[in-house]
Image (cartoon, rainbow, N blue to C red; front, side, top):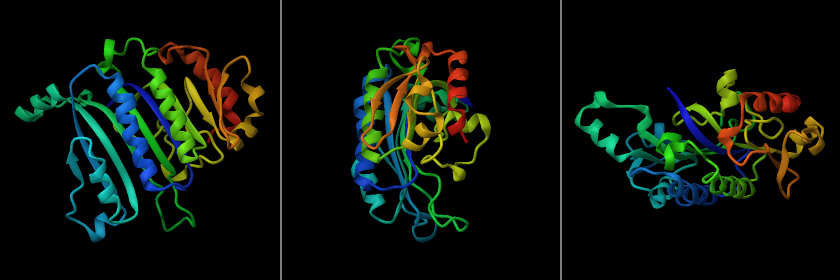
Amino acid sequence: MAEPMLIGAVAAQDSTVAAAVVLETLRRGVEDVVAHSMGIELTWSSTASTVRDDLDHPSAPMGADGVDPDFVATRWSEGPPEAGAFSARSTVMQAAVREDFRRYDPRMEAAWVACTFPTTVAWSATPVGGMIVTLTMQRWAMYGGGARLDWAVGALERWVHDASEALGATAGFITAATHPVRLAESPWECANRLSPSRRDVANQVWGFGWSTLLGPRQLEAVGGPGAVEGLAEVSLPLRDGGTWIRLPYEDPADVTDRDLDALQRRLAPALP
């Protein structure tokens, strides 16, 4: 079930940084963004997996209580990392579900700071799927019920900018959108039923919204920074030639479907 979310995410085609850098990015997302934004009591848990889990470690523990970077680091040291997450549930709603599982409501999954690493598959000479780092927050659980987001988005924007530099990302976005809980696909992928295994974030736009990261090849494909002039403004040039652009609103919740349609048309040459 899709829920109204505030989402920030970045993607790189290859995993060229140490797992410790990825883990630190997730930890900062929890401390700098989620802790700053959520207005309800949260119960956190940590999960981590490696590509060897199914075959070599069928009974390895996949999760731990709380935000536990040491647990994630230890799990990732046991084999090539596959995925990891710090996830937060509404404490009140979780207690209700423990009393009666029929009370489960997907809105209890209040926040999710997660990553997936590129996957090795038989049909491709290079890993597929990309290095994906995502932070999602259910708007209902944010201060003020998420009715306004201008007070919160600064922390998220700083985090995605830092994450894009740290991971060498060539695609990314911040958006206020309805999106399935705990799903690493971008809203664009969901809407168009695009397979994550076919991602090409080095050359194509992965997702877009209030703020959008265009890597050097995407920027070239759409005609350079001038192609979005009058529609979006450059918010941060990156040292590798990529650029974050932003629609002219202080609040992502103010972006309209018409704005997104216009942005989609400008980005069409770089969209999959």
